[in-house]
Each structure stands twice: as structure tokens, then as C-alpha cells.
Length: 207
Image (cartoon, rainbow, N blue to C red):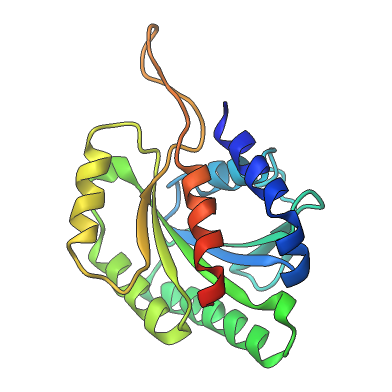
């Protein structure tokens, strides 16, 4: 069973709960090329990220929604940018979160932030650590690190390394959002999206 099919089952099972609370709102961030679009498509179960579908919130943030699930993802630009631009992206995310709280509309509240890192990079950069720590402390919103493209043995090592850093995050997940053809004989099947969504559901009462 594909990961997105598992996600659909989870949403179907908890559909009534979601209807009561409104949308689940998630900010997704990370460096350019880490696989955010692939992750978004897997979560929604369709190619939605590459089409440009989404309402611009700022120059750095785009709102992605679908009628299939009560879910909003706020996609940010890649962080292969100057320190000044990184600061602007961070401030725009903080403003989005604070404006939602000030609106007194529970349907707009941001429930968590996903920060994506390509597992094959084998490292988390110093500027990423700074960005994550600032987001976590200044937003007071749970941050989850997602190790995308986790098809190699190094992914688990990087996950353990990040876990031991004691960052201000909730969890670090290894995820392979779509099947990866290793060679002619072996294909690594997609995994992790279902566990990620289940965990988001688990921490919703805390937000």
C-alpha cells in the first residue's frame, strides 16, 4: 500500500474530529531541493505542489489547500538565500502565526512547523540549526524535522545525530515520500508519511 493511501485512511478515520476543529494548518520549510514538493504531493495524494496551485500569502509563503482534506500547508521559499532573506522568511512565518492567533479564528491557527532536510546531505547546517531554534522559541509552535529522501542507511544515523542535539523540536522523522528505484532489481518503497501524519494528529491537543 502506498504511503498516501495510508494517509487517506487516517484522514477518513478521523474525519469527524477534523470537521469539529476546522483545518489543520502546517508551515513547511527547508533549503532548496530537499524534496518539499514531493512530500506535499504525497501528503495530499496528488500532484499539487508543482502546478503552482496555491494562494500567495507573502512573497515567501504560499497557501496550499485541497477540498479532499481539511488541511492547509503554508509552503515557504527555499533557504538557499542570504542571511537577510532568511531573516525575512523567518519573520514572515512568525507574523503568519501571530496574525492567526490575533484573529481569534481557531480555523486559522498554525498547529506545527515542518522543517525538511535531505537525508543524503548527511548533515544539518549551522544556519539551519539557528533558523529552527529561532522559529521554535519565537513562534511557540511545535517544530518537526523531516529527513526527506530517506532511502539510504545514513538517514537513521542523521536522525540519531539530530535527536542527540537536544534541539527545541518535537520529533525528527525519516520519510521517503515516493518509491525510489535503487537499481534494476530493487525499489525502496515509500514510507514514513503515515507515521508523520499520525504524530501530527497526536500532538494537536497540545497546540
